[in-house]
Image (cartoon, rainbow, N blue to C red):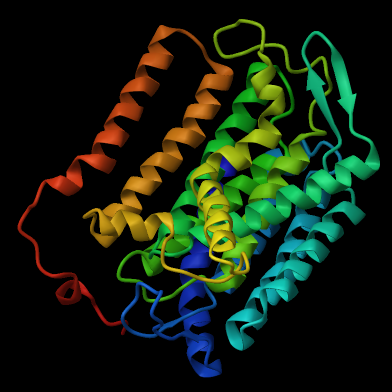
Amino acid sequence: MREYLVVFLVAGSVTYLLTVIAREIALRTGAVAQVRDRDMHVIPIPYFGGIAMLGGMVAAYLVARHLPFLSAKNPGNVFRDAGVVLVAGALICAIGVLDDLLELDALTKLGGQVVAAGLLILFGVTYLHFPLPGIGQFSLPPDLASLLTVVTVVATVNAVNFVDGLDGLAAGVVGIGASAFLLYCYQLANLNGQVLAMTAALLCAALAGACAGFLPHNFHPARLFMGDSGSMLLGLVLAASALTLTGQFPASAVTRGGDGAEASLLPTLLPILLPLSILIVPMADLVLAVIRRTRRGQMFYHPDKQHLHHRMLEIGHSHRRAVLVIWLWAALVGYGTVVASLYSGPVVFAALAVWFAVTVFLTVAVPRVHLPHRPEHEREASPT
């Protein structure tokens, strides 16, 4: 775990430093988010946070290749598959940069997302097989595996893009999800005596680090937005990390949970479920947006100001508190899914129940408590 911590710190540090350069490039090229009616910011903010995060993840990958544990115990395709994911990430980040500069139409961006997913499939980063305890190994037909891969990547990319509506929201949600998935990968391998060096854990450590390094510049009031270059990059890497895990363990490997009992079906399905469960809030927001816009006779990609984060503000949450509450929900779903899949017993479920109750209380009851505060416009700070 220490070397994964090094990967996390390298990605975070490099991202933090590159963000300053990315902001300067955005200002000089005119990649700036102007104030629109549906937006929450009140002054123009530069884009290109995705470039800094990509740089942080690439730096972490290069350092990881020279770390003794990861390089000496590399089980075959750890660095190869991680490299493929970063190349696909660079492709989708480039598409996002063009969108930040030129405002590409939705169908063009969708085509770019499919091409990036196709690149993953071309080099073997796809759903392979799933170990089913007591049954054996279930292998997906190539056509079905490719289709499921494209759907997972595109859905995750767009879910992250949809949730990127408040300062720090998307980076925080994805960072929490990546850290939860890192914990799952490491513990599943550790509990079952498998090799701890794996692509999914490496990618999640780098992804979580990049999000952590970006947040100081992006938390309210933001000095830089990630833009589509960042949101699409985060969604692709999170989805791809799950893809790489499906071929990591043989069917006989996943047999034990954290309490010594036989592993349930949930850990074996988590590579599919976890990216979706981590992003269940933005995924639900995505589905509701499609339904809402279709009922109004609009195309599903037509923007509006009725997303979940907008409604959080409407019920009385401040900008920062709305972000923190959604982070808490993301942590509950992500870490709760991981803990419930590997551990059991009344203490575990009681702790999750308390966490759920606290989260509901903070979501619903806190906005009804009116504390003295300055108006939002007085708290806005202009970027320097």
